[in-house]
Length: 452
Image (tube, rainbow, N blue to C red; front, side):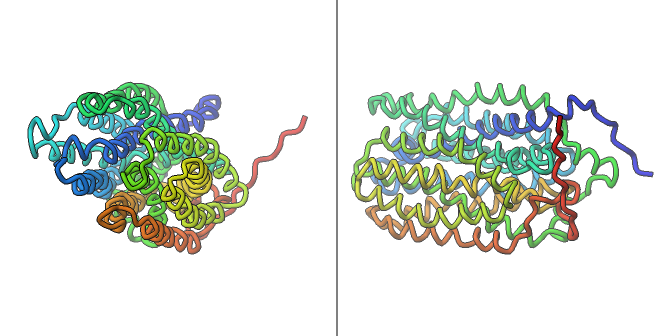
């Protein structure tokens, strides 16, 4: 007879979905606060601090390439952290990734510059960026698995969306922190000002660590471990039983290219001499777009609990291909009000449809025993391409960096694989949590309404 899991206190079980969602939000906010302060710095500051200022175009290209380095490290981190997470549980990975991200980000703020140590400076920068990438590889997959497996079956979309709301919250926080920093006089900005946002990550890491240490492991994982046991080699099981879904997640994850191009390349383009918008004004575009996204993401996710994951994801993927073209065109005109409006529509509203639903959409493709591995490996391979999309965009834009239409077409092309992934995927929003990943899933009953 298989061992059973001891029942939990009902009051404690009721509160776990909210605790899991909160822990996912806080950790994701830290991860992507750290990730996006790096993106802002790579576009605005690092070309002058870590690379050769005598060739500004090459310095910018190299700086943007270091942004993509973390994405290259993420698939490697996903293989390791996905394996461990499906073996020992979601909670341990969530705590580990939080500590690693906070430490590596703080160290970036302590690095010597090129003027101080020469070529060693960019080498150390890349090393810290790799550590950030390894951390991010396990963060979203473990947080998504944790919140999905704690959530009521009919509200998985809503509760898992907190991970991505945290992403947007972290991006918003990063932008707001960078606004006063970017307004500093040039000499202060390049000497010490840029370091402050990296040092501040410690405070968020401490809060997230306290919350995550108190979180319970998920009932689904505990039941799997107690009844059938955990797989010795989750990757083998994943590729044997879910290889098609892994390919779908890789294709779907390319939608993140919209985010990286919006956040990094468009910022560099808008503040270049060719367009001439100020750093502060463009940072406000990102801040307000992320503020709108904080509201839009849970709304789109709630809609997916009603009508399904696929239609909402398709709206986000197809809509992003169109609106990114309009956004980059608006930047090219130098019209700031139009740029602000289209930036909010593109990133705050339309992209949020795909961004808010993918945690449940991808997670529901896999069974409990390989969910973390499937999400981590699939998303991080796709995200690796998305990370280097910024570098490709810089090359596509030509030597003077002004060919925005080619970048827009490139972004639209990267939205095609997500569309194909969604069109070929199963609809899972009504499948019970314990049946997810099954070839013959049942349909989850809606909870009965209690009448007085």
